[in-house]
Length: 225
Figure 1 (cartoon, rainbow, N blue to C red):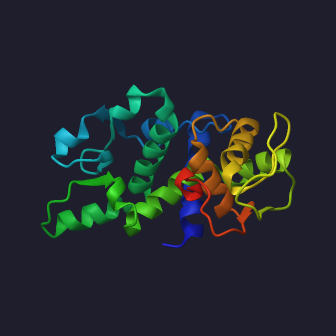
Figure 2: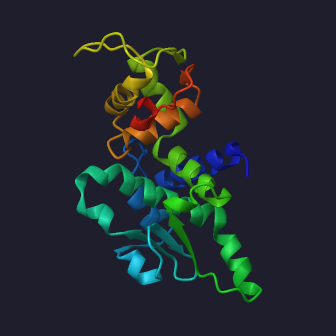
């Protein structure tokens, strides 16, 4: 499934929710509300490792039960709000993009009632598709570009240095090691309060707003080790 198709489906879901609630939807995108009202699904928080007998499950989409389940550990730490919202949006992506796969499997006699999501499976096709859907849902293109232009400019920000030459309270060098400052600036201006800095810097690069000209990856501190 091409990225453009995934982005269009995420945008359509936001429009449908705006129609249902009769008010414009702006960041922070109310993903839990979208799941319960517009997708008409139950949202459940529990010990998914115990429930499914598999370790490391962040979320699950139970298609026959019309339920999205999220690991309750994400509720326990307020620092995990970005991960919580992204997991909810990721599971919403599975419902929109992949529930037909579960229904098809059921028709041929295979017992696959739920899509289980673990970090270890992130490279699977349906997982990166659900991740991309979550990114588009929580950080819509228009709102993200608008916030970026208000902080930096309408043109792309090219990053040529790994280490920054300066960093102060007013300005900073847009280097790889300052990726979190870039993301945080856009988050604050755009009111993306339920999005992690890592998710934001990935989204900015995917939209071509931040162009990393170095060989180091932006978004993971270990890239600077």
